[in-house]
Length: 360
Image 1 (cartoon, one colour):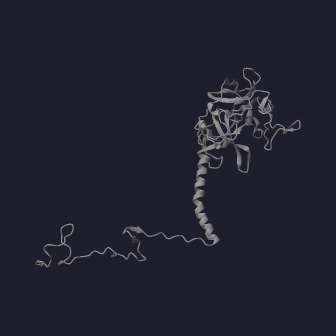
Image 2 (cartoon, rainbow, N blue to C red):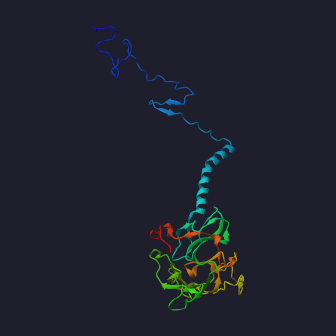
Image 3 (tube, rainbow, N blue to C red):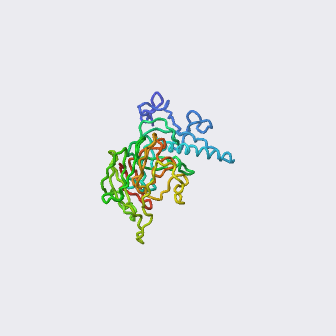
C-alpha cells in the first residue's frame, strides 16, 4: 500500500525534472508530444519553414522555371544561358587587347632568338594604353628603343581575320640613318651583313646558337652565327654564306640558292616587274626572291621605326615593305616581348628547355 502525502502526490516515486523540480500538477504526469506542431501548421501552404523527417528546419524549394515550349521561349532561354559566356569572352579578349597577351610564332625569321613553336609573352603596356580592339591611343608613357623585340600589325597586309601580326627587332629609330653593308665574301665574316647606324658601324663577334635551340634549325642550311652589339643590346643573329642555299640531304643538290639582291630603299615606289618577272606581291611589297644583304643609306621618317628579323637572310621585314615606305608607324606597334612563355615542337610535344626562356 502506497502512502500519499497531503498534496496528493507520492512520497517515494515522485518524478523530478533536471533542475530538481517536480513535473506535473497533483501527481498528474505531463506528456510532451514531439509530433505536435508549433506555431503555424507545418503542412500549411503559406508556411515558409517546414520540418523534414529528421526534425531539422529547412527552406522550401525554389519554384522551378517553366520549361520552354514555343520557339520564342527556347530563344529566350538560350539567350539567358549565352549571355554570361559572351561577357566572359569579351572581358578576356579586351584584357588581351590592352594589357597582356601571348603570341604564337609560326616562322623562323627571328631565329635563333625565337624559334618556330615558341609562345612569347607580350606586354601591351610597355609603351602606351590603347582602346580595346583598336589602335587608338589613350595615353603614352614611353617609346620603343633600339634592340626591343616588338609585336606589330602590318598596315596593309592581312585577310578577313585582320591585319598580319609580326614579330621583329627595332633597328632604326625615327630620324636615324640606316645602312646595310654586305661583307659576306670576307673570309673573316662569311655570310655577314653589317649594320651602320648614324655613321657608326655595329660590331659583331662569332658565336654559337643557344643550347635550347639545338636541333631546331634546318640541317640543310649552313648557318653562321654572330653576336650583334646593337648600341648596348647584345643578341644573336644568323646569316647564310653567299652562293649557298638549302641543301637537299637526299640528293646533295642546292635548293633555294641565297643570292644577294641589293635594293635602294630610297627609290619609291619600285617597279612592279623587273625583266618581265614580278617584283611585288598583291599588297605591293617586294617578293622574297633573294637575300637583301645590302642597301644604301636610308633615313627613317619621323614617327616610324625600321625593324628587322634576327635571321637576317631569311626574314621578311622592313627591307621588303615597299607598300608602307620601308618603316612601321609607331601606332601599329602593339607591345614588347622579352620572354618565351612555353614552346611546342613536333606533334605538340613541349620543349622544356624553352619554357620561360629570356630573350635579349
